[in-house]
Length: 397
Image 1 (spheres, rainbow, N blue to C red):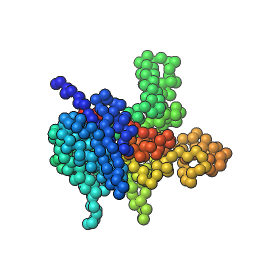
Image 2 (image 1 turned 45 degrees about the horizontal axis):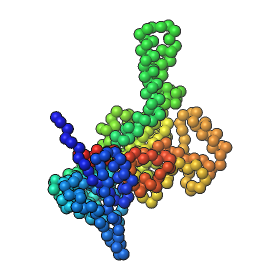
Image 3 (image 1 turned 180 degrees about the vertical axis):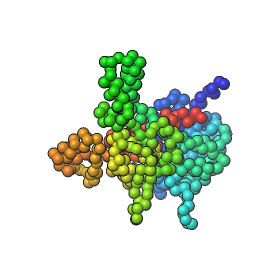
Image 4 (image 1 turned 90 degrees about the vertical axis):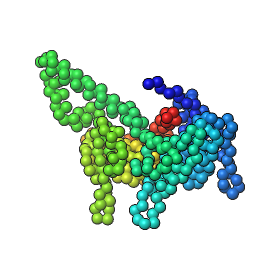
């Protein structure tokens, strides 16, 4: 079957998403950036103007939104409702982060499920000449929210997990483990087939290492990558996409008046454990998971979230602290004997204000929350995995 020709897309964007929009346009010559004058009247209400409005008639149009706060939602909705009415051939709304997704249900009478309210608003976007609006959202918080949208929009739910999988395969640990695994299998098979007496001790050593993989990891400083989920909800939504990785599932349990994190299943001992979730706000759950995983022998702990919300600069508690200007210092320990001894020597010869907190080796996020991306730029352990390529592909659907 012959593939349909790709379409030319005119991409509008909000002020916050300017950097991401430029990256999306750089992915394909078929995507052209357009501009909007974002102004305000003296009373604070938006004064907006869509440039070259007549030139977009009959064209495929998209808008890249960022609902980072209630204050910017109204002005963006005004543009979103105006664009389809300019006789465009089709309209696509790209909303990487659906912000009210964590409040999707009523637990008691009087609760307002704002996720449903937002879905109803977006469901009333006017249809274009080509039909209903296409709505692209990444890793919506609750899977049942896909059913909140009406028939006037076509929700397209994407995920950032492929970006994580690609990054995990680029880790030095993964490369070293793969290379040594191939070498071990080759030597083992060659010595078995050729039955050379000179390789007897090598065969015995490799056999012992394969029976005791933790010893192999400690000797050669290679860590198997293991995926951890902070709760059952994260496991349900992501485990099928990561099923070729070993897994650890955590759970919050109640002990008296406290809720503590426990490992429900899996073994992180001697591994590089990557905690995976859809979003992070204060980060308390991730920190508690890291402590539990480290206490059970994890060699390294990293984290991935698609949406790094981080209200009130809560990302600061994850930054690697290398000087005495920070107020908080987190204790950490390694369970490899060599690392533990080395850590003791550093601590004994360094003042408390100079100890570096590095509980997370990596913290991967996407650029679905542009304000956070600007705030954490060049700050370890954060690393941004851009959605630009995925958005570019989604605009061709």
